[in-house]
Length: 403
Image 1 (cartoon, rainbow, N blue to C red):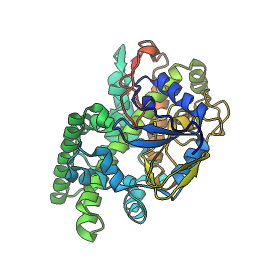
Image 2 (image 1 turned 45 degrees about the vertical axis):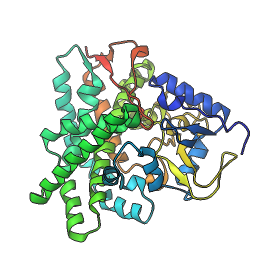
Image 3 (image 1 turned 90 degrees about the vertical axis):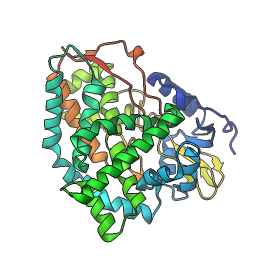
Image 4 (image 1 turned 120 degrees about the vertical axis):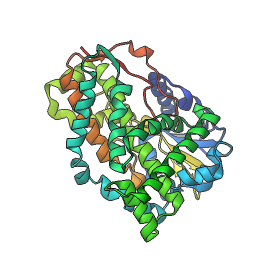
């Protein structure tokens, strides 16, 4: 084991202030690319802070997803039957189950299929901005960054309008995990599962032209999904299908508003929007870390031999600020062309919804900036707070002045 890697730290996972979060990760990265840490639940793990090392960890077949390790993470928080019904999804699976589960929904998220959603995404965006137009000040997270992606993913799945507010409410506690409080997390997870089962029963009775009905058909007709896999799949699609885009929009707007020269460049040269989205993903992405892996044998990463049976957590936020990723990584530069960021992961668990998130980000930011040329922060950036989460990296609120 390399010297200095026995340092035990929890601060990077519990600070809620964005700049402090980046600072804490930067201090770790400057010391070494691999660190021994303790998670908020008390479990020991290895945090990967180097770009090359994180990329290796995300791709290495000796680092696998483990049901037992996942259960240990929520032991005492969720009833086993609740975990089984929301945790048996492709993000927690290895091949061949991962391959089978991912194949069932891949067609809905191909670049071609996603681009067909562009007119509807634009329509939802325009309607949300219309509703904001008369206001002097709004919370951009509540008024725009949340409702856009949750409307899109709910329409894609076939979640009725009158149930979407419930999913949004419970999702915010689910992603906070134990940091929301053990009782709150358990109640939110159980309530969301109950809603999912109601929806699935409704689709069995009256199927429609939506992804949820298609998944129910697969479960009931070809028996390629167990009931737990079905509820887990829909749970994952609903939560991951909107939370990452919420943070892409919120973090992206904040980055531009606090870098006025980059904002003005983007306004003057809107053709740079696709590259700008990639840079915003790298600079302050929607996830702090990837979901964790378990070593099935000793693995050498960054000069450290990690024993078998250890939890490994690739750091995405910190790896994207590593000079090994790109030059001058702490600078926001929307003209950047060398940008192989890890915001959506890498390897077989690379984010399935990345094309949809990119589409929503382009339309949301492009339309917002064009429509409100005087958009600015309504409070000093130092007063903003981030939602507590081990996994996600997103603002609790983003007050902006519209005119």
